[in-house]
Image (cartoon, rainbow, N blue to C red; front, side, top):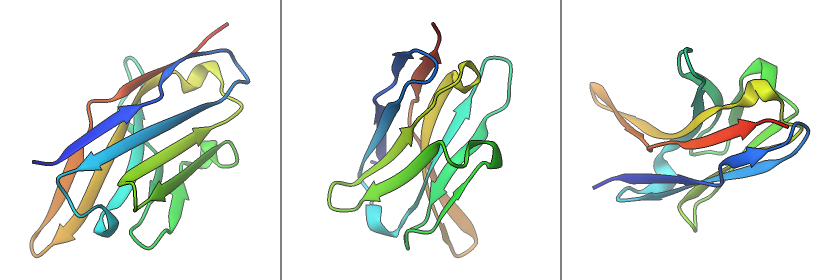
Length: 119
């Protein structure tokens, strides 16, 4: 059974930093592309950042320079370092793991962790 467990969310003041972690189990972590998505109240879920199994990264254009995604295959964990946080970064942040196979896609989601940026 695949599990993705996010942690590290919380309340932070504008300009502060948080580091989110997503611990994966039940899959061969190193061969999966991993990603962070977020969903703010009343809005659709959106991509924050992704890192492939070969460590290529991509980010939402609006977040480049503030957020950094990384992975540690030895720990089956993907991280999201978030700096210079703004109130508009408030959302539930979700971890995603996926990889293609013939005719489809393995696609898994965590339960999410709340990030609130407020003074």
